[in-house]
Length: 106
DNA sequence: GCTTTGACACTAA
DNA sequence: CTTAGTGCCAAAG
Image 1: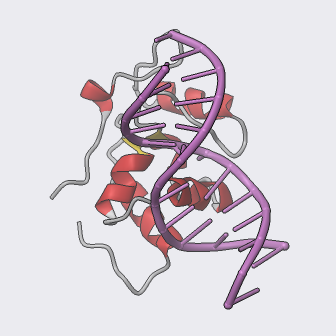
Image 2: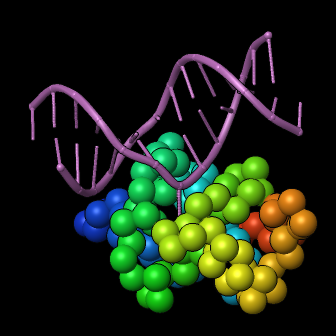
């Protein structure tokens, strides 16, 4: 993927989110990596500020350890969305990244 | 332009 | 498995 440098960091994050196929998830780490930075937290900040939950599938972004992480309107919504898209979430609220992780490596 | 704020990650104990 | 501490970096105040 070739992020457009003219856009803001936040915008680039959103662009990457649009590449995530349905039924898959990615991690804050993967996004940061794809952008060539280690701003894991800044990625989360971008999501948190994202007012537009319908344009950007921010619910497909989880922590690198497989936990759900947070969500602007409540982590419960995030869980529902993921289940709805076919992602298996274990009882403890974890996702098997070896099966559902989408990488931006290209 | 410096300080604070986090939807995180990693290591060590 | 859990807790505690450190690092990270863009955006907002």
